[in-house]
Length: 62
Image (tube, rainbow, N blue to C red):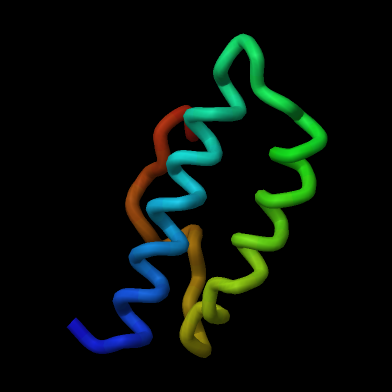
């Protein structure tokens, strides 16, 4: 796996763990609100012409 791909995979994993933590009873929402956008901002931009509406249905979507 390329080094950049490893970084993206690690960031996505951290976002997943943060989402699980945020759903916990004792979650510090200030921490979640501060860290979530920072992690998301570190992800690369989607490729040009990418349209998320063309992708697979997301859980909870219509």
